[in-house]
Image 1 (tube, one colour):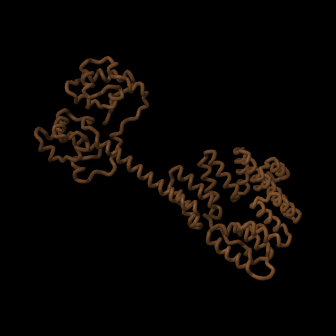
Image 2 (cartoon, one colour):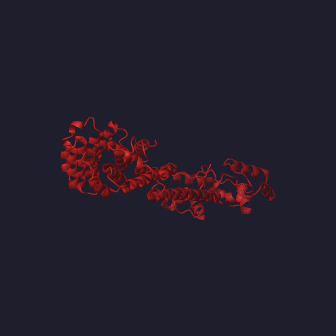
Image 3 (cartoon, one colour):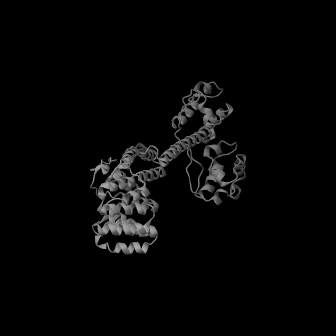
Length: 439
């Protein structure tokens, strides 16, 4: 972000000030709380001094600080000039004294104020009064500025936006920005409308362009933080809020929003941890029957009361080999199966179990299957009594139950042979389905 520079003139110690001097002072003073406090102290000091005062500078200073009604009272004492009437019109508009605002703008025009600025300001007043037609009629007199004035397109866009004609408003804001790439208000409204339209990427680009062009534009930074939070870029969202708090440490919205972002980050982190824990738990609860092991190995493990992957990882090589009838062949088979998944015997017992298990070897393939098919009873298919009895022994009643089992799991059932397996595979193939595959 480019830091806004000190104004070329000191508003409170200069006799002849321009409207541009007032604008540059406004940007600088409101760029930070420190600037504003220092400027407020100086303004109060100047107001307290005896004798005739520079009422234009003091009125403008009060307007910079947002004290519009007090500014009006001081400005009315100033000598007539286009600067006085333009600043008076600004303060009157802020206090919703619209008829008086128009009168002040007419006086500014007679005093030599820029005709485009006056007419666009009048259009703004009409818009705020709800007279969109009057605003548009006012802007028609400025149509000759269409190719050269960012202010003209900005004023047109504000009217279109008020009518809900967002597409044309966006086009005019874009034209304003093309003419004047550092036109802050045009950039802000453009980004805001693009965000409303759902074009978050473009909105982010324009907000970034805005905050990189000058003073820390608080509303832009806060809106940008919301966009970043919505797309999960919490560090960037926090960065925007930190930028606001750097210059405005007591900004209530920024303080609350930072807490919200930190809560979102913590919540997301906690949710991910819980998901990982749930996935890990499911993996550890995977039945040994799901793995492609020989009948001898499965039977030995079952007799040792090793029923799940978690049980197996708690068991050492020595404990397996110490069991009767458990040989080197079975051990080699089990170790190879575990190694293929990045695991090994006894690792859980040693406290060296990895914090995150690689789940790709265990995850089921998600298939978009009609619930009607999944709920279809296996008894409806032509299978031998032996095959149906084996399925009933495993409490497999529906197609959904069946495809959640592996070939090894079925073959592990007593009296379930190759013929029954062929029958079941054929029945599933007729539906375009198959048994669950682990390896």
